[in-house]
Length: 135
Image (cartoon, rainbow, N blue to C red; front, side, top):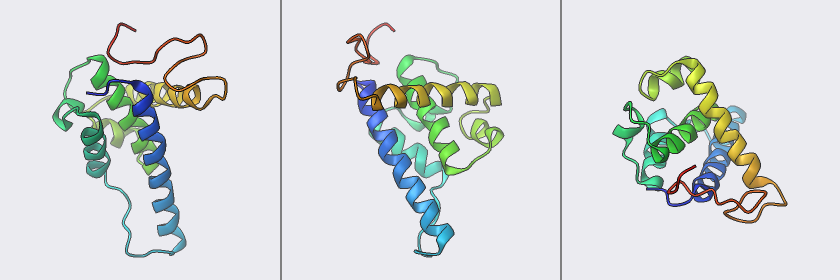
């Protein structure tokens, strides 16, 4: 399981860049051999990184670790260009409002992590963003 939310956010930022690069390369015709990331490929990459099985990402389970990784999935599937309904269906039949909320949570984590006054692994007041404690 993800021990530190900062690690997950770094992974999401890197994967987002890769998704955007591949989408741009395809649309500009730079590399016709590349295909867009599939929903499955994104979920498997998240699962492999985090240790959260893909079965848990689509299940009704709501532990903090699973929700953090699922929120990353909502965000990255949106970057991939999927509509809210398709994202919700891909991640266990969730409602569009759940997808919006989860995507916004991950977007906020990325803003916090990217803020220049925040050091690695801590928030503005030095709060740890670990997913292993009570939050």
